[in-house]
Image (cartoon, rainbow, N blue to C red):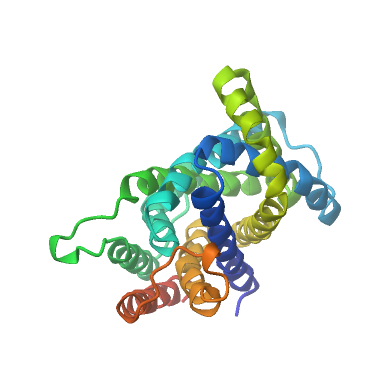
Length: 299
């Protein structure tokens, strides 16, 4: 297995747990997505020194500053529709909508960094997208009605699709992994902190501070998994074409389902997942199609 592929697969392994804890926080602890986004973003500052310890960064060129601003905006703006999606649908179904973002990545990659894939690789992306499409259908499948999370997650998927392309742009302009990852983390924190200027937002944050303190350990675990997943994904993007590296994260719903199957009976409060036989069979079949798509991508 290529090194980049191994690293890329670490992302969905960690993102799976991150999404599960996100679901727990969004559904049982914080009903206001923006307030939740603020408190999760605080941990960017906690993990920033770790990034710089792993690799000492050098200051990027000043003309790349708008790219870092774009990455910070992406990392903040997708959170609201993402949390709202988690509040209205199963975790694995909600995050499967991120597969729609794979439609945008090759297009953006072509226009921004001139990245071109082979026909079999585009077929692989298509299979991944289609399996995500059918995973996204609600239980009323005879009417082909999308779940309530569809609108929210289509917005989130488009926003997140920009992240990989912008990171790849930085790497192709000589920016180090630590500078790119650390820069995005710092910029996203500065952007969400700027929301405190708004009185209503500031009031909501203050009202939820006791709740945050009570659940700080949950935030730490969730953001720890997010940090590990994002770090692995960013490194994979540096080592491989962005369309390939980002497509691997489509496996995240599989890991969410696997974790739910193993641990939902012991920790039912953590999971929002249908694991009846019909749901599991449907998801497994579609994940097999995803696997075939990934095999085409890396062939």
